[in-house]
Length: 316
Image (tube, rainbow, N blue to C red; front, side):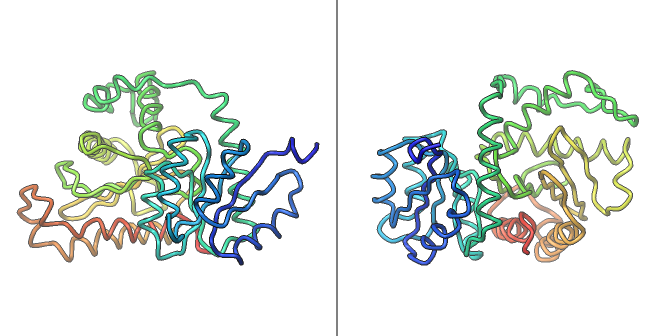
């Protein structure tokens, strides 16, 4: 295959050392054609010259940040997978990047393993997207609002009917960020009655949707406690919906729901429990008689951001 026929990948970073590291890595993968850009302006120019399979993009760049570039790119090339490069302290920017349409983020400095993993995941994602049937989301809210575990066939034996399967597909569209490599896709901090105190999502979840989902999570959690045995090796309640899981930690005044794919290890489980304990310890006086005023629990988002950073990816 000639160079003109190879899949093009563009990498944007103002750091010369990072660009040279990427160039060195791609010499190992002659099946791809790497194009380097030194800043956002250079990237936009090169994006117009040819089609690309994917883009790697630094978040912190002068003149135009990677997040600003991401917004422009996703507007002009909505189907282009973008993986952001960031330092470990940029976790909030990483979350913002997901909401702007990024497929994933990688911690700097990039390594052969992380870059190749992102490329392989992109190839897999593009193949899945090419064969994927669109799901009608028109009745999503009605189905979630009317969620009833018993009516959907969730029983002790684990049987499920077609309505449950339909709900799973819809929830996956809402809650799971397509192509994301990390495990965590959504975090919901809830009152015992199902009111959303705070949520953090890799997908853009509207406030009204978050409130509806919060009520459904509470119904699922309560049903699980009555009808299922939680995983015997875990202190958390965990249920699988299709290709993803929802796991719950319960406190005296609140619940923490984590939507994830793959497997969470013991350290992640402990981090989830510790997060809820720390949140309730700091806000006990407010939570005891909470009237729904979110300003009284404004710092709750900080707990979710730290938890996301701690458990989304293995720190190897």
